[in-house]
Image (tube, rainbow, N blue to C red; front, side, top):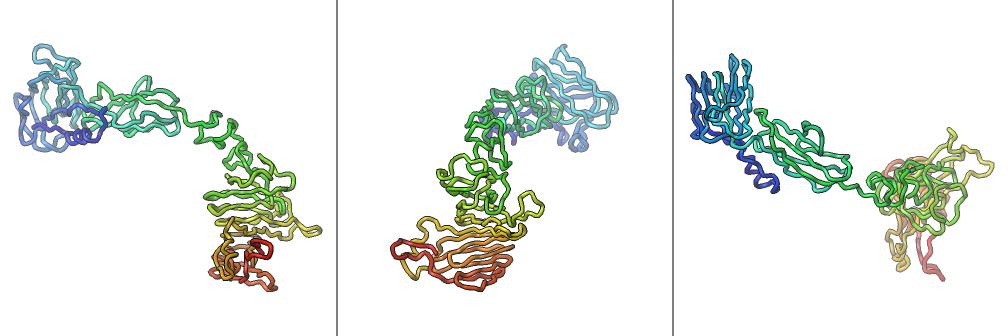
Amino acid sequence: MIRAHALALLAALAAAAPARAQLEPAPATITFENGQTSAGVTTVSSDCMTTVTSGGHDGGAYLRACNGSIVFQVPQAIVELWVRGPEDITLTPCDGGTACQQPVTVPATTTWTPVPLEANDASIMQVYFTGGDIDDVAFSPTFQPDTAILSGPATSTPDTGATFSFASNVAATGYSCRLDDAPSATPCPNPLTLTGLAPGAHRLNVRATDAYGATDRTPAQLTWTVVPPPDRDADGVPDASDNCPEKANSDQADADRDGVGNACELLPAGDAPPVAGVNAVVQLISGEVFVKLPAKTPLGLRGMRAPFQETGFMPLKGIASLPVGSTVDARKGELAMSSAANGYAPADRKARRTQSRIRAGIFAIKQAKLKKKAARSARISTDIGLVTPPGAATACTASRSAKGVVRSLGVTAKGVLRALGGAATATATSATFVTTDRCDGTLTQVGKGKVSVAVKRSKKAVTVRGGGAYFAKARLFAAKKGKRSSLR
């Protein structure tokens, strides 16, 4: 009985594979099922033979025979079969006449052994065998198996690499690959990904090995080109790993280790620790955050790339040390800020810091220096003053009854931090809260912890705990005589 195994695989490949993935037909196979020993295209004969219905190499039927032969009606390039016997088995492929190849001897074994027989001139017309068990005789006028590369890139980069997938016209037990002029092929997975290759043309050869141990004589081949990765600044460091892809910096120097090279730092480097009344260290957490430096600042901050009065708003990248007086626009992002919480020098073990995360608003960093004659251990608050976005207060000047939101800040603080609203100041030591300035007052909403709210013109502070809120009513952003608008 003929089993054209892998026909389904071939049909799928024909439908889905690219034009280069043309595979040879799979070999025909005599399986000895249903007691049959003839396939119509070949004959198996022996002095004595019996078809056994189970126990073959795959559990199915097989042939138990004495000395005999397998005769083909047309020349075959390859004949493959499984054998087993209590004595040595000799297999001799011949051309149908007197020309025979060197016999192949399979030592006596109780297990099934696969044997491929190949003829360089595709002339096998007959295979003689000396007894034993025989199963699944596969034969083909073309050499088997056949391999095809199904997919692979036309170009790739050393970093992204190139991925290839391949297939065989029969079930493959494995693949071997040879890259360029490598001395030999080595086992490879399917699919195969190659990275780190030098720029230039490359060639991949792939061979399949079938269940009988035969390996493709004519490997599938694909060529492609590895192109250098993008390097906009031409400094020899690819953009994907360059900490400053816009400016040449082959040394990749990064003083504050924030992933932004010194050459691309627009703001003071983040390796200057926070000092009360001088600076705070900020780090981008998510989204986009922009910073405007003050027109004047104490000397000593490093890493400036332009005079303060000329910089305007610049994007925050990585970590930066911002002078007190800087304005931060975090309406589309979030940042972490570390600031001094007492007057000790940053390196002193008694130095304390206020840690905060701020989002969804514009604010100015404010902080006083340690007062004269004050103990260095005295707590120093970090103040963030809400800043009005351009045009946000227009509705407040149009109507005295307007109640719309003008500006807001979301804050998580651990330490001493004050959010300066128009009608109230929220002071937190360990809390998550939102301060919102509306046309008609300042709203403080506390998520966790507790916040002390100091209302303007009121001597008594209000404590707001997690889940609570307090609204300090006042008319904010109202137009004053001689001015278009004013913020109290």
